[in-house]
Structure formats: structure tokens, C-alpha cells
Amino acid sequence: MTSSCRSTQNSGQKVAVLVLGMHRSGTSMLGGVLDRLGCQGARTHLKAAPSNPKGYFESPEIMKLNDAILATLGSRWDDWRPIEEGWQNSPRFVEFRDRIAETMAAEYGNASLIYLKDPRLCRLMPLWREVLSDSGFAPVCIHTHRNPCEVSLSLAARTEIEVEPELGMLAWLRHILDAEAGSRGLPRIFTSYGRLLSNWTECSDRAEEVFGFSWPVARNARDDRVRDMIDRSLRHHDSSVEDLMHDASVPDLVKDCMTVMERWARDGEDAAGRETLIQIAGKFDASAALFAGSVVGLAAKYRKARGREEKLEALDRDLKEREQEMAARLTELDTLHDARNRLAERETEIQDQKVRIAALREERDKLEQDCETLRTQDSLLRDELRQTGDRLLQLRAERESVSAEFQEKLAAAAAAFEEAEQRFADLHKRYVALEEKSVAGEAALQESRERLESTRIEAEDRMRTLTMELTAFTDTTIEQGKTLARLKCELAAVKGERDKAVAAAEERARALAAANEKIALRDNELRTTRETLGQEQKKALHMIESLHQEYRSSTSWRISAPVRAVGLLIRHRR
Image (tube, rainbow, N blue to C red):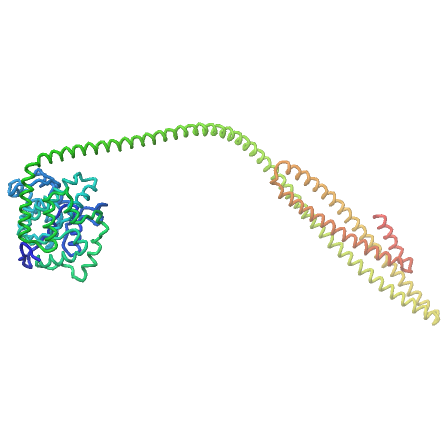
């Protein structure tokens, strides 16, 4: 490869790599590749956008500065007309030299290997190369281009750019020619958007050869860093050079310039190509003097018409938004009417609820009064139940006392009866023995009779004692019967009172059901007590009856007579 000037940089000089190319020609991708190879970018960056998702790798501060310079020249970024030679020497641009130096210091600091990417640099190279040299940077240039038909289509696809395809092609030609002329004498190489997509290492290797230095990132690590910047799917417009050459609508000057750029990107620049570009620039400048005014006027009218069209579109959008807003307001108004109707219904319901609440409050007050009455009655019933419980406990204690006393006396009577039977048996045995020995002698018989009489008297005394004890036991039994009858009466009275209390409580509130259950439990206990006493009484009567039968079966009338009298008394009691 050859270049117009080989680098003679020494190792201690700073280098600024300038990315030169028309808008939408792959300059952002080339800036990204340089960033991945280790060149220092600006501190501030334009944010990525849908039209450029990988990022612009462009300083917004430098872009604003270049727009200000173009505005001072009476131009703009898409202007295709030539700028007078030597414009950078005007005193007016001294301030811009200072501003460029200040912006460079702010954006790059003390970096020694930087890259600058802004398509406006193509038009402003005479000023920038001088300021960079004065700032201690050695400028080197990488030119890139793209099929102008693709550039025009890409510009037209961006709604924020007002460029007609034909004017976009003229702007392409002006950027290519000015960038080539402004970078003559500097180390430079040429590439294209298509060649970067297919083989970016060709560009990096050629740059190292021509610029005379190596990229900071080691060769074995470059591919991993650069790979994500090369995305062929982002090329939305793809036209071949052959199609361009056969397109009759494309000016011959554009075709001839494209031919030179393609050859230089493939083989490197040459003197014949530079001569061709000088001739193209002369013809382009001459033709611009002929029809520039008309084209600029038409472009101004187009922009004005476009502005009106955009205003109409904005008014149409605003009208549609107003209509949508009006529809939304109408819908909201209908909603408010419905809400008002629902509110009226709710107010009616609220009034009804207030009436119901008032009635419920009256009913609640009445129920509270009833509850208070029931509480009072419940308290009285609880007192009565407590007294009844105390009385039942007292009766139970008396019953237990009587039962214990009865058991003791019953046990004593049984012991006395057993002792009497034993003595009777002994006497009977003695009587038999005496009868058997009656033949033994009258004296012995008399003695025996006396002894028998004595025993009989003793027995009669004992029988009288037993009779008195039986009489006392009978009186005690009769007293217990009276006590049991009194208990029955009291129990009946308690049950009557309980029934009345239960009936009254059931009529007032079911809350006293627990008290009824307790009364029922007490009733069961009394019934059990009564049955127990009845069984004990029956057992005592049965025992006395048994004793009575035994004494009635006795052969001694005197002994059994008192018992028969007691039995007769018991039968009368029944």
C-alpha cells in the first residue's frame, strides 16, 4: 500500500486519529473499532439511538462547536456548496481556535492517542489540522465512504433529517472531496463501509503500516474486543457499485469520485486518482456557481414547505389528540353522570339506612333494657340457687349424720340380737341338760329351776332392755321418716320455685339455660339422695322384719311378745 505521506512520528509525540467520511457512511462503526483497539475517546458521548444502536462514538461538545463554525461560515452540515479557500485564516476564527483547544483539553485531557469522529470534520479540516498541530497532536486520517445511493436512502429514513436524496448525494460528493483535499500531506489510509464489515483487520493492519505505530491492544486480544462492533444486520441498505454505475440518475461526477474511492480503498491512493479528484472538484465548484442559487432556493422552499407540512402534521396530531381528549372528556362526563345517578341512589339508600339504623337503635335500647332486667333477674335467681345449694348441702350433711347414726344403732341392735340368740341357745341347751338330769334328783332340779328362773328373769330384763332399745330405734326411724317427708316437702317447694324460675327465665332469655341445667343436676342429686335414703330405710325395715319373724318363731312367748308388739307397731306405721 502507498500513501501520500509516511508517518515520521517519534515515540514521544501525541497522535490524533481523524475519522473522515460522510454522514451514514460507517463512521460510527469505524470510531468504535478504534475505541476497541485502544485509542482514547472523548469523555462525553452522544447516546445510542435506534438508528445507531451501537453508539456514535462522537463528542456532543465537538459537534456543537463544529455546528457553530459552520453557522459562522453561513453553512450547515448538509450544505454541498464550496467554502472559499483560506477561510480558516480569518481573524473571526481565532476564537474558534481557542475554543477547539479548550474543548480538546476538556474532552481528552492528557491522552496521547485519541480519535476524533464527526462528519463535519470533512468540511473543516483546514482549521482542525492546524489547531491539532498547535496543540501538540500529529493528525493521521482514516477515510471511509459508502455507496452514495445507500447514504441517500439512509438519510431519508431518518425523519429528523430534512435532506432530499439528490441533495444528499451532492452533500456526499462535497464531504468526500473536501476531506481528501483537507488531509493531503497527512498520513492517511482509505477504506469503505463494506470492506470494514467484511475484513476490518485489513484497515487496522494498513493503518499500523502507514501511521508507523501499533495499536495499544495486543493483536491476539483485538478480535474479541472488536467483534461486537461489526454487525452486518445493521446494514439496512445494500447497493452494489455496479448498480450505481449503471444508474442514469446518478451524476457522472459522483460515479467518477466513487470509482477513485473504491480503487484507493482496495489498492491505496495514487497520483492519477488525486488528479481525477482535483478535476472533479473543479467541475463541481464551477457547476455550483451556476445552479447553487437555484438549488439553494429550491432547498429553502423545500425546507419551508417541509416545515409547513410538519406544522400541518403537528396540527393534525394535535387535532387528533384534542379529539381523543374530547372523547375522553365526554366519556368522563358520561361517567360523572352515571356516578351522579349512583350517588343519588346511594343517598336514597343512605336515608333508608339511617331510618333502619334509628329503628335498630331503638330496638337495641329496648333490648338493653330487657337485658338489664334479665341481668337483675339472673342475679336474683343466682342468689336463690346459691341459697338452694346451701340448703341442699345442709340437708345432705343432715342426711349423712342421720344415716351414720342409724347405721350405728342398727349395728348395735344386730349385735344385741345375736347376743340374745346366743344366750337363748345356751339356755336351751342348759334346759335340755336339766331335763335329762331331772331324774338325778329333786334338789338338783330345784337348783336348776332356781337357776333357770334366775336366767329367765335375767332374760326378761334383757328383753325389756332390748324392747326399750327397739322402741327408741323405732322412734328414731319414725323421726327419720318425718325428716324425710319434710325434706320431700322442701324439695317439692324447691322444685316448684325452680320451675317458676325456669319458666320466667325461659320467657325472658335463653341465657339462663345454664342455671336450669345446674338446677336439674341438683334435682338429680336430691332424687339420688332420696332413693338412697329409701333403700336404706327399706333395708332397715327388712332387717327389723327379719328379726321380728325370728322372734315370732321362738317358743318362748314371753321373749317374743315384745318383738311381736314392735312388728305390729311397724305395720301400723306403714
